[in-house]
Image (tube, rainbow, N blue to C red; front, top):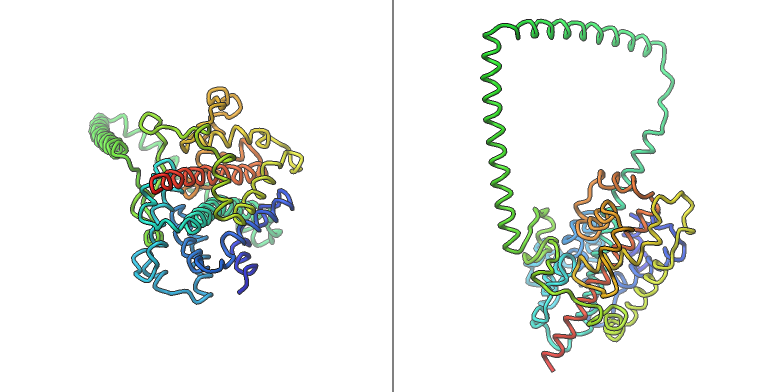
Length: 421
């Protein structure tokens, strides 16, 4: 199975929804094919990359993508014990298994990453570390995109089903419906009669006493429920104060996820200091670090980002509800902020005029909880923006998140290098 075939095994899931631009579509497909499926020479065989596929899609909670990686891994004759035992498998090289914690951090809380997380790795593993970060964040992004667009595909299919007109009814079917209507009317009349009898009984004093007793019992049950909810809320707050929000993970995912950090929780600027772009930025620092270590991978990512950010409302034909394309800078800086990077020129309060509460809620769900988004969430999105804008928003938000995660990784490597000079 060649690289194009491997990539197409994944791409066929969402490719019809990336038709915003032919040029962008090609750039995105090249990014996926070359960063994930190209069989690197020497120190980074394809088997490692596919196992990263297990880890990264699991931490996002995307079962569709995980199943695809497992299928491809099996088709290539990969060691079955890597699938069956996951991170507990002794056959997995230590430095590959060691990326599990970093995978979770990059996916959910990049700001907590510290140079000590790289301490177990050898100093000469710069290429391995940077390529690992690039692969993991790319698969995390792909998992987020697939999780959301798969719901959109299901939603579109349901709409198509509704459009299909039923066949003309036969005379027998019409007669059957008439009988059904007649029976329903009779049933309704009987029900109305029963309701009348109940109302009459309600006037009886004994009935009133019974009603009162039932009401008191009902109130008692309500109070128990309220007390239970209050208790749970108190326990949840205590757990949040301890530092970690946990989510119930699919057993299939648990095999490939480090126990440390499995879900997103809000960045707290009162406890942790923002990483300022004046101190360390994507343009001036991160790109250089990754270009020096994994130049070809960075070229593919750079090209995809450049085309994505150049897209505008002229690209799509449908009516624009909110011009998401004009908000790309505000959206990117908002994502950076909620993940712990602050641009001194970005005024969060001023941007509230363009990024409404409803829009920020959508953006945050895409960035932080992609695996938990439901069909109703998409329905709410489509009240504010149209489908093409939603697809663009998903691509833009996941791109901004990947840039943020890679920036933290580069900063941590910079600290790690300084500590080990």
